[in-house]
Length: 349
Ligand code: NAD
Ligand code: DAU
Image 1: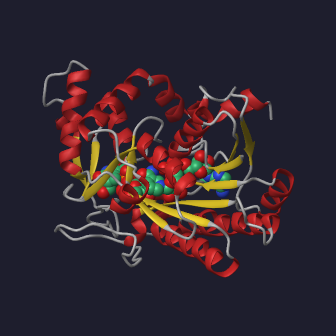
Image 2: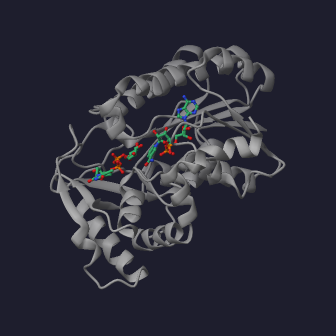
């Protein structure tokens, strides 16, 4: 079995690569990544020498390069994570999101279709998507299910919604075996410190302000990233082609409550007087089009494929803080740009 993972040098992708490389030594795992600002090969130091792992630096917007790679390698399956993933960046420069998230996905689908031709037996194109395609929930109960209508609001979620539609279209039109999963907010080690949790850990560590958008009342549903990687494994191996699976932990937190909890954990870990980190909170202008609440109903995945999240959030957040404090070199390399030299050191290009 030869699986192509795209975006494997990013946050979630690196956990998926690590999980598959170590769980399935009999598989070959090829990690394809452009190494944008979000791609960091230091995320994979512990598995980079594994015999069943290899890395190729490619851009999914390059259709000829995708076709050439598929023709050379064949691939039995694709787990597609490569994307522009940060909502704030999509508000500042939407076109890049169309190029990578929409066109890049279509290029991969075309390359897979050209090489797999009409014989799709034993093949699978797995597209990793987000709960943001469903839009926003109000200040009440209720959660997104697999049949919730798409209603994206940000350029990021619009581009992910579009890519989901293309994946479904290739299943319905050409019979390509595809699956899609839509997951809620992930947290854990190796997340780029532009996203809420690692940004705030880094700012607290450096006594810098914590920019809370609006009143901090928006709600997100948080999932330990390793649980997401495990769900992807379960869906890849046991999911039904043509189906969609929602992934989430039913773990909703108002941003400000999460931030206060994080401040308390950081005070304790850094031996600071309780309440010191909270003083760094600074309310700033809200994100444009800020979705109010996300919540995922993953009962289909739980009932049909037996997946369950493994960690309570308080425990996972504490583990996350411990990881960033024990790996301050990783954080310093990311914030200084040092991490971008690692590819040349490793691959000499
Ligand atoms: P990330 O930004 O950390 O990583 C994205 C990776 O894709 C990087 O390694 C980057 O170099 C690579 N990449 C970007 N453009 C590329 C291109 N043109 N060609 C090849 N590689 C390219 O993202 P993440 O948070 O790990 O998210 C991974 C996937 O999961 C995305 O598709 C995202 O939409 C989805 N997702 C993320 C979350 C979350 O909470 N982070 C939740 C649900 C779904
Ligand atoms: O729901 C899944 C999505 O979760 C993924 O598809 C995206 O790729 C991922 O980036 C994430 O999107 P969010 O926009 O929810 O994540 P972010 O960490 O950027 O923000 C989380 C919440 O915190 C959100 O309500 C905005 C708020 N926030 C964020 C930042 C970076 C702040 O208040 N201040 C900040 O500085």
